[in-house]
Length: 285
Ligand code: GLU
Image 1: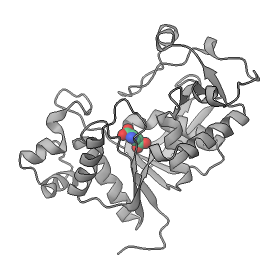
Image 2: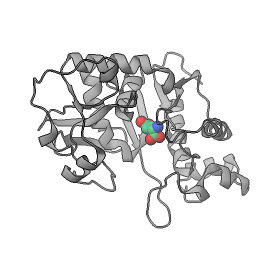
Image 3: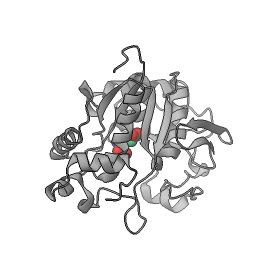
Image 4: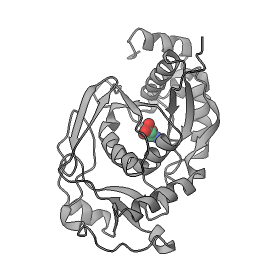
């Protein structure tokens, strides 16, 4: 029975950059189980900001696949590309607080000067931003006018600060800012927020109480915690799901077309069989 007094609000946040695969299905199924157990609700967020990789047909396919899995969510669907005002407002807040700086270095310069962050258990993370590229603290920032919004901006991480959170599945997590991850992108010169900023703004401003997602995003959680704190919002709880691996031990990615829900469905897989395999813990099929 649904407990309407429950304040639990979760979210499903697929990116329409390919077809959903078994790994997504299992993560979203876990998100649903957790929402059901708490008598709460789920939102669907369409993470459609990466205009070079998203496709309209992937949006339709993603919604159809989620329905096929039997998932339900509150309407309306949250569409990130329609929320640019919220992200610009957050950027202005970070700018006013002096917590960001413009970065004019090319991808190549960054790759050449970057040092790799220590990797934890298969976490494919970006290299550390070279500290020599960072302007001194207190440097006057250019305004966020049209030119300013057509600039890459990075968040200045509090070097040496240990950040922690208690993950609902993985337990105590900690990372040191400036060592495990460096100054990260919050705004892209094509006028859109980075994944980190958009996700932090949405999770916080939509009142998400628990974020359920893949364990590959644990390091991103530390970045998002910094942003949520800087924006003055309450921090949600986090639950990072185990990643699904292929036969070679590689984590599933959208390039694993053979494991996409569409193909498995065309081969006769039913959602009942899939969900039963998740329940029994044998999701390898
Ligand atoms: N759209 C992001 C992804 O698919 C969502 C990540 C998240 O749940 O925060 O990786």
